[in-house]
Image (cartoon, rainbow, N blue to C red):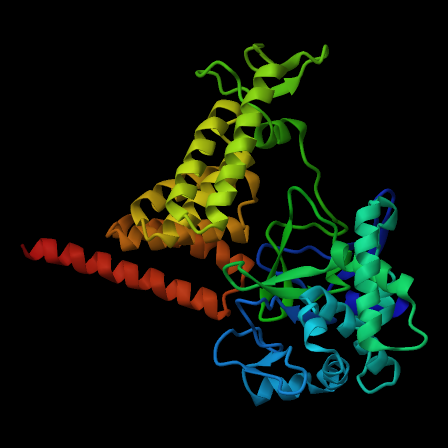
Length: 447
C-alpha cells in the first residue's frame, strides 16, 4: 500500500478508506475540466471476439487479421502486435493448443481474461515480466468480490467457469475457489474498453482505476486511447474531493412517472397510503392499477420488439419501438431515462436504414435528457451532439451542423483530450462545415 500511495502521489492522488464505501481515490490537489486525473494500461485485457467478429489481441483492430496457427483462438493484425504479446501468449497458446476443437469453442473472452490473469501473475512472480506499484497481482487481491451479494445460480456458473480455467491451465496447486472469486472480482471491477465513440471493443482490468467509486453525478469520466484507460476531470474537483451524491427530486424525474394531467410537468412520489403516486406539483393521484396496466403493455410490446429485432425485421422492430415510445409518453416523465433509451434505440435503427431525417428528429429528442442526466462535459452528451451534427450535414442543414459540431468539440476536447486523432478529425469536420457554409454564403452574394 505504501508503494501505491507513493506512486499515486505523483498524480496528485491518494487512496482513502471511507465508511460504508471502502477504498476510494481522493485528490490531494485541485483539478480542472480536461485535466488527466490518472491513466493506466490494463493489467490484463482481451478483445470481444465472437463467431461473427474478431479483433487483434494487441491493438483491437478488426481488419486484415491472421489467426494464431497453433492455438487457432487468437488473432493478430501483424507481427508488431504478435511480438508485443508473445511473452504472455506463448504460455496461453501452449495451454489452448492442448484443448480439443469443441473445448476451444467454449473459451469465451471472460475465460481468456481469467487465464491471462493467472499467466500474468506467474510471469511477474518469476520476474519474467516486471511488476510495479500500479501493476501487480496484490492490487487484484485487494479488489472487492461482493461474494455475499451473489445468488446461487451465479455462484454455480462461476464454479463451472473456474473448472474450465483449471482444465486449460492444468496446474496441480491451483485454487478453484479462488478462481471463482476472481470471476466475481472481474464482474465488479473490469471495464469495457471502448473506441472514441464509446463502441465496445474488449474488456480490461485496471486495478487502480477500479478504486475510483461510481457517482450518479460524476466529476470525472473514463475514456480509452487504444487500451490505455484515461480518467479526466469534467468539473473543478477541489483538493480532498471524492464523489457527489444524487438527489430525490432528480431521481423521480429521471426514473419515475409523469402526472396524469397533460398540462402539468410535475414529478410523482409514492403516496403514504401506498395507493399510488402523487404529483408533487398539483397533488393529483395516479393509481397503482393504472401504472401497472401501462407498464404491462410496455413489457409485452418490448418482448415483441426484441423478437422482431433478433429475426432481422428492422422495419417491424422500429414500428414496435414507436409503440413503446407512445406508451412510455403516457407513463413516464418527459425527461425519463427509459423514454430516452427507447428513442436512442430508434435513432440507431433508423441510422442503420439510412433514414437520416427521422433519425435526426429522435436524436434531437434525446439531447435535452442527456443534458439533464450528464454533467456539462460528458462524452455521451458530446457524442450525441456529434451524431446530430453528422445527420444535419447529411441533410444539407450546414448551419445547424456547425452549431452541433461546435458543441461536440466543446465537450469532447475536454473528455477525450485535444491531441487524440478522434478529436483532431472532429475539429477538421467542423472546419469543413464552416468552409461549406462560407462558400454557400458567398455564392448567394454573387447572385
